[in-house]
Image 1 (cartoon, rainbow, N blue to C red):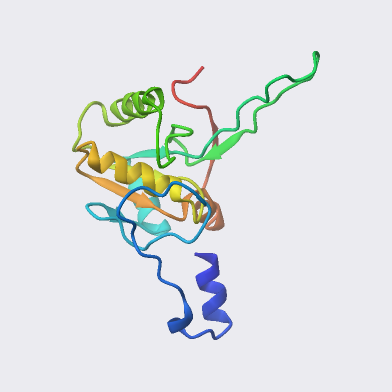
Image 2 (image 1 turned 120 degrees about the vertical axis):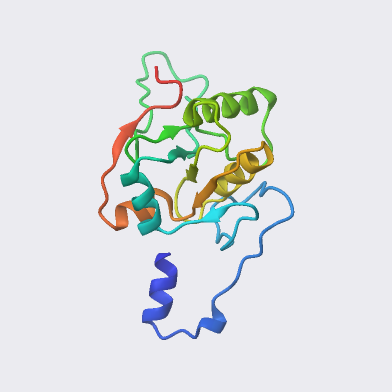
Length: 178
């Protein structure tokens, strides 16, 4: 979103702005790159639209930002601290579920998280997000649609767009909360 604003302010003709086509399958590499402007079967929403859904409280927000694993073989006595995740208040965090291919255990985790977020109702509105220009939220939203969820929104600006508009955030923990 910021690149679009910068391009418009610099006088760059709209013709030069690249359009990213929606892929046939999931994105499986280079997850931080320009994203498409559409999601077949779902709705792409802007920050004001995401904020309205959040304020109404009728949609479940699903954050799919990956979480770095604790490095193996840390020297004894090394202190390891997970990087905190500041996200949209009330969001459920399902880290590592936005990759293009998921192991069975990760898919099961995704399914249980969606069940919890939706209350088991596949018609309950879901909003998927991550960071700006992150394909993981696109993949997760697409996967939810393929799993039969009916009211899927994708918020491609994610927490970057959210904080750009100075909207509130809170620190969250991965589902299920420990």
